[in-house]
Image (spheres, rainbow, N blue to C red):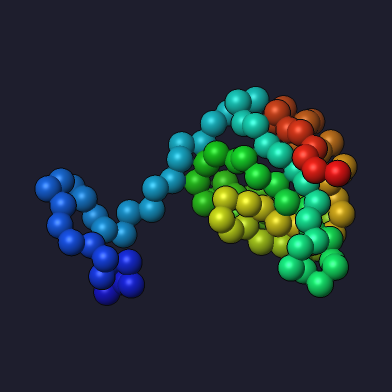
Length: 109
């Protein structure tokens, strides 16, 4: 039994499964509105590049994360609907995403 199942009381939907992950349908690249920004809060002064706004499944997040990690040879993760790449790669990521026809903007300073 999962911890989240303990909060489940009752559903009238006969097809309801308590462990359902609600994943959004992936949009075409030109319909995505992504934001790329740098962050160093709670990271001991180290800079990370964060990509937000991707609409899709967890696999879509993992695929994009994996692509940038291997391309730049750095670490990273994807969680809470964000893709985190270690280091300052915002300009390079912007260029790559624009080339792949994403609507992408640089956010922050």
